[in-house]
Image (cartoon, rainbow over all chains, first blue to last red):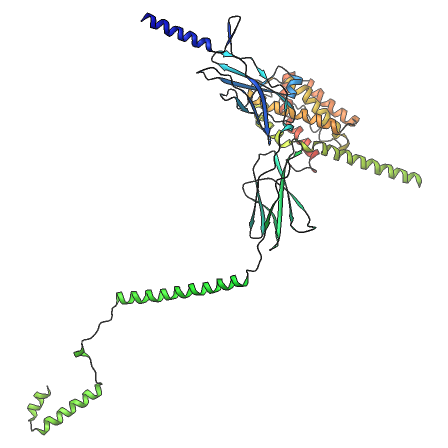
Length: 305
Length: 176
């Protein structure tokens, strides 16, 4: 039992010894994050660093920034980052913190319980005018004879310069400034049978820079009049469908009539084959025959009734 | 006759230079995102103005200073007022609230960028007496108050200054 307790204690002390802490003057110190760098594309800026590893522990990081104004006029002032004070991931989206086209200093430190590391500062100050601008994604569509463009939404910093032209020698290139929205933007009403080409690039006013142009995309507009054969086929098909529909309606009517009100057939004995005039003539002949045989008037009446 | 000709030519040249000067200021500030600055200010306006304990006093005195500024003096007054805010107001104000601190930092750094831009494209910005007088009035108003109160009041009047810059730079650039 005692031996087991000693064993557990030894294991615990051994584990603590594995923690990469330096003891400086008897005080435990957490190492500062290393390799700070900023990646910036299309005005989205992300600060990253190498994580501080402590087995079975969750490290928290705090990020602070200092604009050029603060560096020059109040160097003791550091401002906590909007989204990363604190954060658990070894990265921070500092887009909302970098609001002016001046140089910014950034620093990070790690925290574990009551232990706090020293601040680690970005080696070279960051300015948003160094952001990488990529050609914009775009989608060209036709709505009838309207040429429309839908551009990817890159945020409020961006304007789009859209160039479009008719694909024929000597055609004039038009330029339209577009701000992307939810709906596609109208460019031009095009002529049927022609081909049109479009390309676009972004412009960021805050840094005064353009991106490269996107790949040119061309569309061919369909002709106005349908080919004659197609029109003929369409007409014949329509007539056939109409005929079949009318036939179906008539047949349905027939079926309904027969099922609701069937025709009743008379037996042969009740069928009248001779005309009523002949019947009356026959009866007259019977009366004459009766008078010739000498019947009395009373017997004649009885025979008649 | 010759004298009349020469004076007309000089007048024309003067008018041309004057309009070029004003257009130059517009071109200079063409990459400024005033809309973003106005948004930043709008986010803190109520909190800042609530701390202003001298409601009946104004530091910018727009009717005395900004509204009467002639086109020739716009460059000088803009530079002077930017320096006023950068060198005095933002420095004298001490903010503890992190959210307000972020907005004020955004404005201060944007003003610093405006100063740099103006320095690059308006190398010769002559200050006439009218412009100097207007700037002096503003500094005197600021000095009459205790420094913290003066800083808070000046911060609360930033919308007046931003609107004045917008008015004098709008017209050649796409609205931002």
